Every structure is written in C-alpha cells, then in structure tokens.
Length: 344
Image (cartoon, rainbow, N blue to C red; front, top):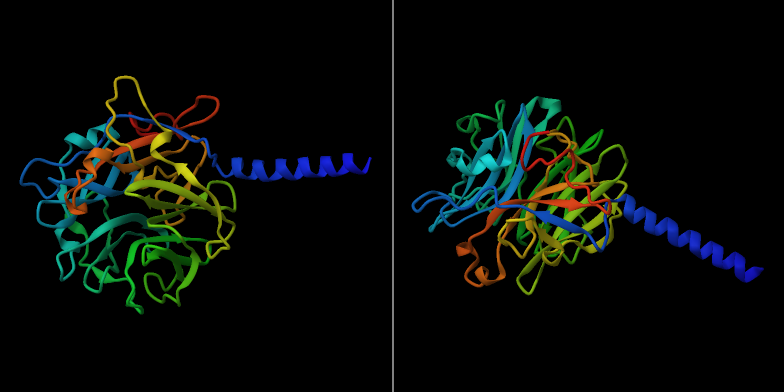
C-alpha cells in the first residue's frame, strides 16, 4: 500500500511539471512551418543590399509595421517597411531611418512599442557612441518614417562590458530594461512608469549562458512571462525559453530547444532558405508596452540563413526575414489565422 501511495504521488508530481511546461507553450518537440521569406536584401547600392535582420513588428490600423537592422556593403543602419499583408513587405517601399543614428553612424537592433502612459511610439535600439549604448527615439505617428525624433541615450553605461540587444517591457507599475552583457548574462533594470524613459536603477543579473537577442513577453490572460533567448553553438543559431511569474525573476529555464533548425518544416513549394532560427520577434497580441502574446499557435518573424551561406565575416552574411508558425499537436498553425497571408 505504501509503495502504491508513493507511485501515485510521483505520477501526480510528474503530471504537474509536464502540464506546467505544456501550459507555457513549450515542448522539446516543437515543430514550425516555414513559408517563403517576406523580406530579402535590397538591390545593389541600397542601404540593405547585404542583409535584413533583427526585426521588430506590430500590427496597427490594418498594417504590419516592421523595423529592422539593415546592412549595406559598408555600414549598418535601421530600416522600416509596412504593408497590409506580410508577404507584401517584399515589394513595399523601404525607408532608412537616418535620423536615429548616433555620432558613430550606427543605430540598430530595434524594438517598437506604443507607450500608453505617454501616448507615444518608442523605438528602442543600440548605437556605438559608448560601446553599444541603449538609445531611444519617439514619434506620434508610426506610419511616417521621417517623423522620428533625434536619438537620446536611454541611460549612461556604468560598466565596460559589451551590452547588446535592448528590450523594454512594462507591468502595472514599472518599466523594465533587459539586455545581454558580455554575450552571457541577462541583465535587467527598472524604473517607474512615470519616470520612463529615465530613472533606471542598478542592474541585476537574472539569467546567463546565452548569446544575445533576449526578448521578453507577457503571456496573454496569465500572470506569466516568457524569455526567448538566442544560443550560438558552433555558428548555429537557435531559440531557448525561460519562464517567470515576475519580470525580475527568478527565471527558470524551460528548454534550450524552443525553436531550432531541425524543427523547421517547409511548406509545399517552399524552397529551403534557412537552417537557423535567429534574432526574431513574435507576432504580438497587441502593440503596447505590455508586450503580450499567446504562446499557443504563435508565429515568429525571424532572421534566417542557410548554413552554407554563414561562413564569412558576420557583416557580409545574407540574412533574410521570414515567418515560422508553431504547429500544435492538432495540426493547427498560426496565432489568429494565417498572419503570413492576411492581417488578423
């Protein structure tokens, strides 16, 4: 009888743990449907002729708005493109956001959000004025690429380590700034909603053993947060997942195999264009500072590349942007219908 009770207790504990991971939208056996790229490098001589990468995307007033890191043959910059349908981005007019560059003519890795407490759009990005310093620009109109303000530092760096890939998310009382330090530790700082974009406190390490591109989202309808982080193992990029009930942690690793190259499944008639899952942005449930998403049937706009094309110097790699859609066990795909083909 004692053994039976112990067996039942262990079985229940196992079910609780596994159901918790499943609820988080994570599975070590995730699979993703991949369609054709929606944004490829531009023509020779353009500001994005070599690569398009590091996308941030929102759906606003019936249009998809995508901000991305662009690479020409000589320098990095930030680009913007919009369309009613994601595949329409490829033929839409592209805009270089020259006004957000710092003194070193570099402003990249953007994050776009609408900050409701101040009724403004904020573009968070990095420049090289102080070894990858966090910066921001604002606008009242996301659809007018010439209206972004001149860049300002988000905060003054207080360590000599390399900081990279800055990300802002808010809860009911505070704004939180995440970034990667030294391509290893995930750091967070906070400020009040009223003081944002200033007033940041001291940094706190909340996670480590990652490469870069940490993105944090609130799970829709739950008091739960998901951290997507990028791994770089032998030049192969992939996504891992960590989970917390508060933005300052503690963060617990769920899996290093949230989205990987071997989980990609290319649709009928789609030529394989990537073997990696790198620096991407989920198609969010909203566009404000809460950064909500639905982990079930979610879709990601990622940068991708074939392994054979990833051997040269990093600035010369021909990254493309495309959508991967999580395939649930029922075979369902997409968060709210097929967002690749239409705006929900």
